[in-house]
Amino acid sequence: MSAAAHEKCGICATIERLAAGKSPELVAELPNSWVVLGDAQFYRGYCLLLAKRHAREPFLIPREEALGLFDELCSVAAAIAEVAHPLKLNYECLGNQEPHVHWHIFPRYQDDPMKRAPVWERPAKERMRPLAEHDRSALMAALRAGISRRIPDAHLPGD
Image 1 (cartoon, rainbow, N blue to C red):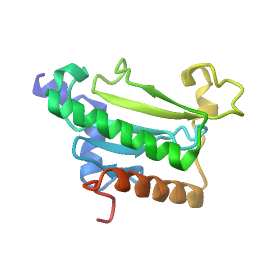
Image 2 (cartoon, one colour):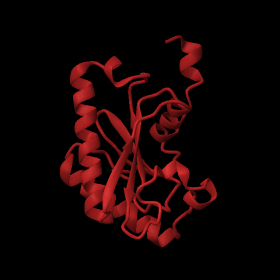
Image 3 (tube, rainbow, N blue to C red):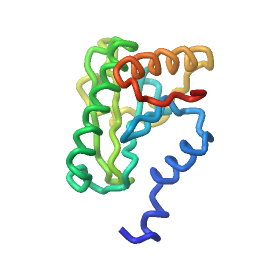
């Protein structure tokens, strides 16, 4: 990828802010990825896992690193499940809008009348529900604890 194309990547720009400590949504830095709390908290516990390496496809990441990335995805998902107690987790690695490997991890709940539909079918104005600050702080603390138990070399904000 050319330097100019890499500079235009929105996820790479987000990673730069995360690395600089300028993103309050940071949950954890892992060996191969960054975990952030999503802004669509209609699905309480929604997080994104952003690959540190810029790549359009998982198969373009060196195999050992890609396997480590998948292990991190599974560990983060387990932490979300432990904290949020969803009916099911949905995983999406699309890249149509941002061609940088990343996963959306959406907890789905029994009381969601659209639980069988893709999350993107819910109107954005409904999905983009922020949490009250005390609930957000408690959720992030619980996610960090669950992730650090599963990934001992996770770096948490304030470490």
